[in-house]
Length: 133
Image (cartoon, rainbow, N blue to C red):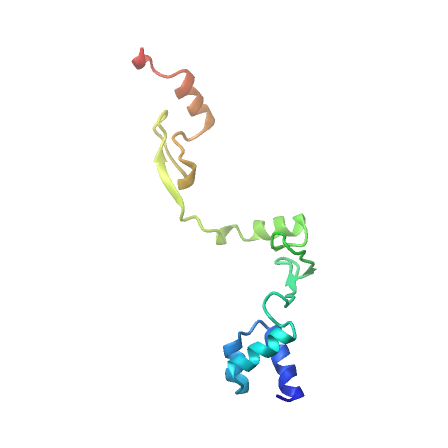
């Protein structure tokens, strides 16, 4: 393996290409690529990927063992989400009928809601019908 091939392997690994793809592009065996990458700390764990803010494109500094950053600030996060509300998945919502006022309302499936609002819940809970007595 010559110097040019070594530099190409470094470049391709930094672009997150796998061993097989690099092997196919350079015509070198997969095991040779793996050995070179391990010896020169080009494995997935050692490669530092640059992350950019989803809204403004500013480079983010990601600390190890922390949640993956997406935005550089709360302002960018709010701005992005306000601009992309329509792209959110609304498929998990279902239509229910309020047990108190019998109106139809929509809610997420995981919420297990029975009432359309808090006031209907209070009315049903504390001012309910006298059928139970």
